[in-house]
Length: 224
Image (tube, rainbow, N blue to C red):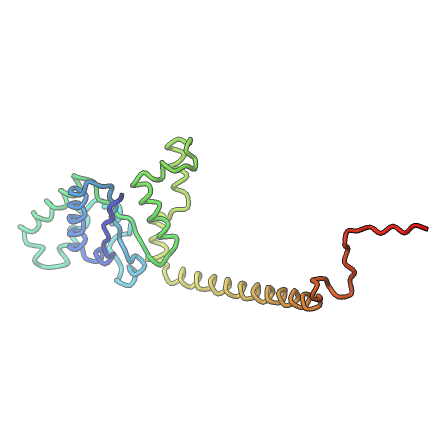
């Protein structure tokens, strides 16, 4: 069993909300005695919230949080008060000292994103190392194999943040091409079925095609 902590990716748009999410995720990881994954959902909507001050990997890998403090101060004048400055430093120090929090991403309608998350869940639960397939492989071989085909955070950044419209248009064109191809194949299949029905109509009730003498398998020998 693996615990999944789902957080709306909107939390990345506000520094205070992101830090609150880090604290909540850390508390859940410490209190739940289970393999744990934190997931940023609705990642396909992130581009519509406006630009982020850092790349996506800064948030998913929880990199140096001190770079977030100036943006936190700009969020609200109250955050510039000295007492809040000390509190903010203490909070980010707590999160960084544990070094446990990280995030996966999910666009639920995207198959590749979902498969990447499922692979991460399998690794967290140990399933990736316990399947019957490749049971004699070393842990290193299994780990390398499981890493193939995954979306890295840079891939997610490109697909859903930097070039979302271009990727959407490309996938839409691919889908239309597949639909056209499937339509042609469907018409060809219908034509073949029609020819088969015509052949069946030419057959008599005995099941043999009209005009053809069936081979009964009996050899007739005439003697003089």
